[in-house]
Length: 396
Image (tube, one colour):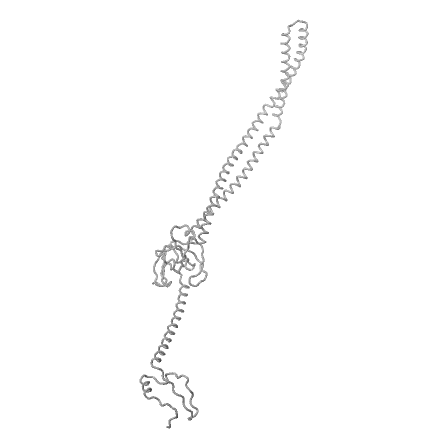
């Protein structure tokens, strides 16, 4: 064959070396490879220079590292997806997990609980003071009512006694009044005679038949008789009044009846006041009982225990789905990576019945449940995301 003009003969030594290394010119990509000449008369472009030995090694190394990194990344992503799916599935079916909750004595809920308890206790003290006052008032009104009620039969007995006496003395006084009137009539006749005697004494004194002292003595006796007659008439009039009082219902009887009515009215008012006071006292006692029950319930809250406790207390949230695992004395386990290599860190000390809600530590959704108090031998476990009650979640 006639060699083409300008064509470069291949270097046999280079080809031999490539064959010895197990490579060929086709293995190395050609850059800007020109198209075949359209005719034999066109000159061929110069052949590309072979890559240096060091550049080929670096190229292979980079490619190999890239492939290894891609494989590692892929398997890492798959492992992450599988791990995430496993964690999601684990917490979806696990019924022993609990979330530690750190409560500070200066938390808003703790302070609110403490303030409400102080207010309730002060209210109880105020109500107790009012109840004591009510009891004293009730005792005093009861004694007063007893005294007033005892007067009613006494007044009734006195009225009956006086009426019976009036029935006996009335006719007697009437007879005495009749006799008194007769005596007064006789005395009046005697006084008429004494008046004539007085005229005779005056004449005898003027005639000198008696002394002046005798005449004065006799006249004084006559005047005393007149005074006695006047007193007798007055007594007869008073006797008539007494007879009227004893034989008829006069103003005195009406006054007694009025006093009885007032006494009964006072007793009725006291009964009403006593009923109201007893009702108020009963309500106060019921309110005191309700407040004491509320305080007793509030004292079972973790917020109150934490606010009033002298030592650090540890609490955890338990969802309702895990309620069966939360019993007093149940062991508590803390695990690495939230589920493996677990160790016992304490026990359940107390269970609180009040409902609480938190954000799920894994799913980040709202979860309803209750609180428990933990007795931890490893206080650092109170800062874990989750702990497990009763048993280890994966048995190791």
